[in-house]
Image (cartoon, rainbow, N blue to C red; front, side, top):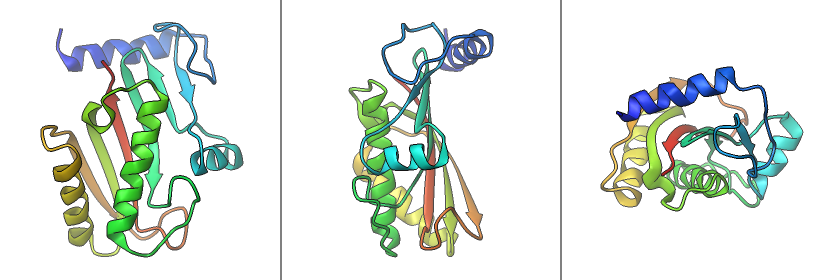
Length: 163
């Protein structure tokens, strides 16, 4: 079975499922498992009423992760630091969902950039080349006029296949 077929099957399971859990202890196939992360991600989840990720079988969808420090929430205005912080936050969400491969489990990312899109793309490319040199996830990059916080320059949403 192809990965696409498995993803479609997993999504169908999500649509048909009636149970949900806010912790990672539900049995696989029992429906979506909503996942939180420690640190600043937990603060955001509590304040804005959302999950950092949702896992359905092997499929994981991660909410957009901004360029803030994943532990303190500090948001510096340097794009390279923000991109690295966003990937650090993605890594935390992947681990919280049970990934042992971290970013190597990524199958798709969407990145949202304020300001010079080409400069943002270069920074995301550099991080992916360094952190996941053998993984080529699909990628959609979008230029936007603003994100959730005034100083935020990047946000990265991701999907993964956890083996």
